[in-house]
Length: 411
Image (cartoon, rainbow, N blue to C red; front, side, top):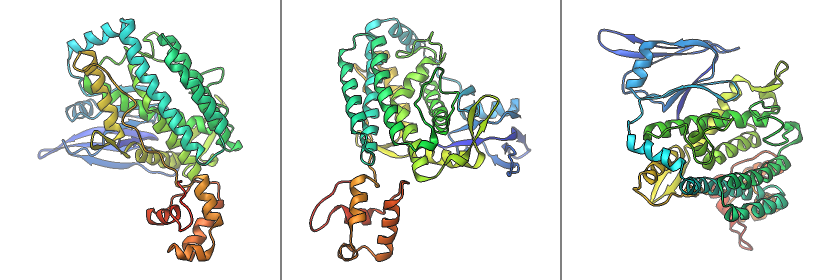
């Protein structure tokens, strides 16, 4: 995941055809304290995975559309809240057999249920894993216990509608746990109110919505590259009022946790804070400040580009998304008999869990010396251990803290 993000007033994408070469010229928009910036790219040398625009002033020339299509560069136009306004994707492979099989599967209750069950199972598995990750630092045992009890109902759901009910009940407990751990000043009450939370009335939901917009772009690219029809889903009905891109929403579900972790990490670490948002009185929504938006995008990049072991290979998560879209296509045309969205399983570890924080706060100077931890390092660890913000510890220092002559603490 490495999009070129453009925002502000006066975004321009055009082509400058010279006698000796052709260049794509990209001009980022103006913001309060940012001037226009010009970048030039040669054909087949575009270093970004896509272009994401969330400005509302500027243009893309017809010649630029041609250049971007030939170089297979997707373009996504987002609203300030992360909702997708439009997308310009490279030509999709023409696979009539695949699309015909997709339509047939969507109308076959058994096949539709099998795929929907695999999607919900994966989403619930990741949600429970995130809750366990949160539980290493916060006291949310009750919420975790109730969420796992609700998740156990998945095996008793015989229809797609009931799968969605189980997923919704787990999601309710999931977001209740988030509400418990988030500071009061964020005023996070959950993902749903009387209307969909694209109308974000708090900063945390505003960040989630914006992150989900990036995830949607990744899923759209994956579906397009395979040649699937994005409007025909299995978990989300194509007549659903929330979206016409039902398969895009389907593919997002097993990977929403990537955004959830990115957002909570951004707030925990102080990468973004309350002052990085502003409230608009005309529609009662929160919006990102420009600099904070860039910081948050970097957090998203780091999370999506993290490696995960998959069949003896290390893949980035954007590659995993494309791989799962490919596996879905193979399932539909009968080239494989099943699909598993649960694997690969990420390894979620906290460096600032409650056990490790307690050990740091109890560590004496003499014990630290025996472990080979310098006094300055111990001072830093104690300072961060008392702070509410998330922090990281160098690998060697962490290994020394985990294993001591008296005990072993797994953090």
